[in-house]
Image (cartoon, rainbow, N blue to C red; front, top):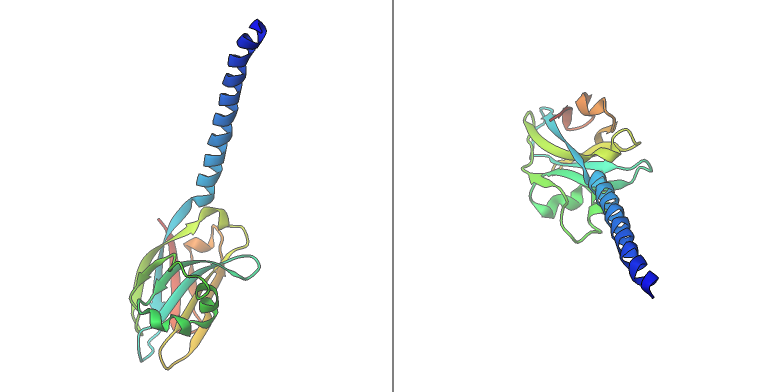
Length: 171
């Protein structure tokens, strides 16, 4: 019995140390998973005529599926369904947009936004997609799309629709 009383405190100390280190490593892993890098994103539009463009910036996983909405240009939610591919992803969610929302961008204009990109997705096969739609005009699923790499987040990429180019600059 005496031996039990001397061993028991030692077991409690060992259990405390084990729980503390396990919790610390778990918290560290969760924090690392949630780390983002801020990137300044300038979108320059072509000189088209008509209404302002709705633009969705999405994170696309290596399988080509939507992972996360990084930013939306266009505040009027009734038009979100016109961004068809993204709407199939977003429309199934009922918890709101997980990104900042800005005004639409008209022809010839530019917008500069800060987007937060998960660090663990850089150089991991993910890509960034810019989808555009303009009322009574075309819809471009991949107006701009590029692989998310350490180099590409410091680059300028030409658009194929309403976007003339996108320039990315890490903060």
